[in-house]
Length: 161
Image (cartoon, rainbow, N blue to C red; front, side):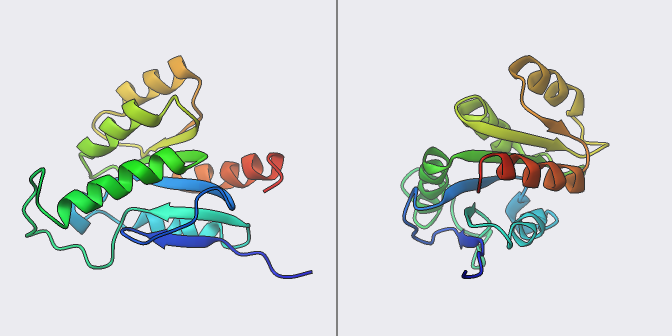
């Protein structure tokens, strides 16, 4: 029996959708200044046969003009939208020192459309808003990333991933 391993694809990389259970890592990046929680989640899934779609790109340049028709910014946004549409599960992480405005947008757009999990670290400035949202829509909510990761493994085991 061969070793299973997660496949991680970072933006703007290409992937084949639905060959594996697919997880999108939505959450704080803050122009590359937020803690790299995506790496921690992706490495925690290395023992599973899943596809991890990570929007944190290695070649991000904060000087890119952020306008509708400006590349490569437009390509980044379109990659993220398509990746969330293609995913089976979206994980939304709000780190305590971030503002994460795009993550709020993504949670509203995709949080109730498919499997989801939310982590708002203790001290996040809008933690109560997220707690209420998660409770209302029955989305698992965590205040510690390690707890989310542990439960993520259990959820994926139930799905026979």
